[in-house]
Length: 498
Image (cartoon, rainbow, N blue to C red; front, top):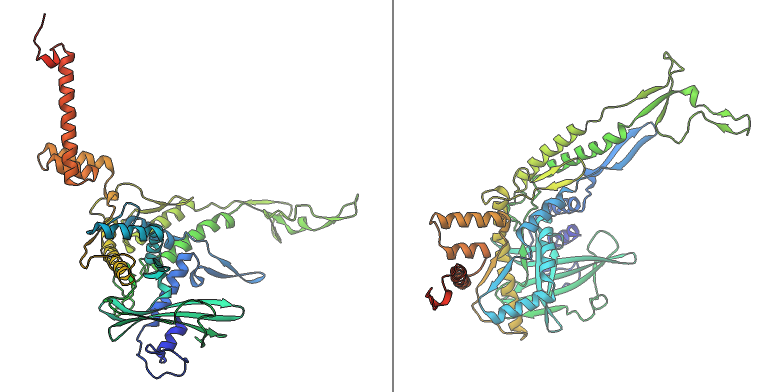
């Protein structure tokens, strides 16, 4: 899909004005986009799905000629992307907005769009494909959020790493025809313009423009919006330098530089599985023993051995004892395979931003380390690095929603707002370790009780002060009760009235 659109762009596809024909262009802007980036996105997408033909399609020769099969795979790209996504963003992540009214409205928008669940999924796609996009828009006087994967997003212009214009292609089929919906996001003399077009094709080219109303009734061909300062889409990408195209604003997959390792691990895993099939017990039987003979009772042709039992192998045993049946048992190299896979898993972990030992294979399944991750580990540093871009993207998303809401009169928002994102760092230490550490610091007079309580319970300073007062009251009551238990008189200060 992306290739035919890039070819059309490079061939002069109009960006300004309505497009009447792919071959009739009068006003255009040259697009310099490296096709290699999109070719790599296709590779990352295949690997994330679990099958990439150049990696996993194996051709081999047998006595019956060439055969083809699919390699067994551990599905590591999915594991890598999913693990990093869960570390970076989960239900404990909090988005705080300085204005309470706006905060309530944004929460409602997120709730209506099931934002937290979808954002978790698309963060995983981001780490796998190298990026993703969120587009806020208005429908039925409500703000909707559209999530777009990296393969359906082509940047047109950018300033440094900030993409300002883009086209969103979406391909679909009707009968034997292929259709491509293009949604353009452009700036024209300070006005933000969104254009929608549909092209019909019978081949591999983009084809010719057809009626938009036929496929998207009610969708405007052009929407012009004044008063915007930023584009109505937010691009997210992994915080990893793009070493494929250093001039591109697009990101790369977290496993983009570990493809050889992934292939090697899948090759070893495939060999591990085939070790049991190829190394199975075999019984070599002289060929004359497996010939068909006539059953004297039934007259049917039968073999001495079950012809459907794959344990038996027939050989011409000339020069050997033709009456001897040989048992061949091959020693399996299970431990060697497991050790080799684990060695490569450690290499893969360091290549993709995880600490050595994060992933392991025990011969039955893949395992991910669940023990405490220290704050100076590579995994934790990678998590914090990715959070920088995600936090900036979430801040832009809140600002875009606020701007759209004001433009369409859905709800009001102040001009200046502060947005902060609090990520879940509980993976760095377990709860017991946090409590022990804070008690030790208070004992050694390295921190206050208030700070320790704030850290342990994750509460504000005011809440910690109230909790300390409550604890002190309980201790005071407990002390008075204990004194009275020993017959000191409790409330009369120990005075004997008798």
